[in-house]
Image (tube, rainbow, N blue to C red; front, side, top):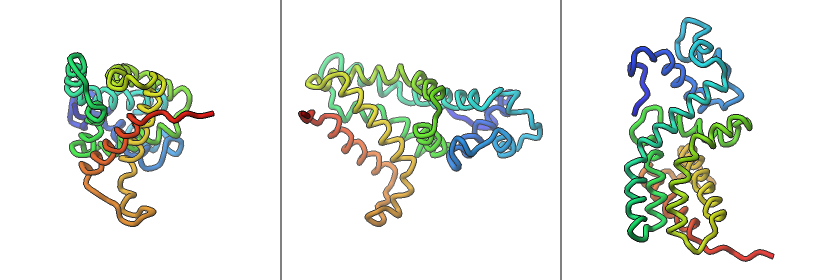
Length: 220
C-alpha cells in the first residue's frame, strides 16, 4: 500500500494534501502548521481545497492516522498471523513478537519515501495530540494492540496483564520516538553513534525484549 500523487487519480488532490501535511507536521509540529500552509505546500491553487477534501484540521489528522494505521496493518498482517499460529501450538520468544510488531516501522524507514515524515508525525502526535485526537489514535490501533497483547500474555505468563500492557506501550513509544529521532545519534551525548536503520532496529529489539521480560521489582 503506497501513497503517491499519481495513485488513484481521482483522489490525487487529497493525497497531495496528506503528503504535504505529513511533511509539515514532521518538520514543524502539530500546532505550528495551518491549513493554509498545507494547501500551499501541496501546490493547490484553490485555497478551499483543504476544506473541500477534509473539512477541518482534526478531520485531516484523522485521515492521516487512518491511512498510516491501515498501511501498518497491511504491512504487519503476515507477521502477526505467523506469530499467532506459532503461539497456538507452542511458545514464542518475546523478541519474535516484538519484531513482528516492528515490521512496518522498519519498512517505512527503508522503502517509503514518506516513511520518516510519517514516523515523525506519529511521534509528534504522541506528545502534542489533543484529547480528541488521542482518542482517534487509540481507537485506530486498538485491534492491532489487542492481538499482540494476547500473544504476549501467553509468552509472559509470569506477568500480570496490566504490566504487559504498560510495557507494550513503553515499547511502542520508545521505537516511535527513537526511530523518528535516529538522525540525532550522529551528534549524541556520547558522540557519533549513528548506524544503519537495520542495525538500529536490532538494537531496539534486543533492548525492549529484555525490558518486556524483566521481573517485576517489589515496591513498598
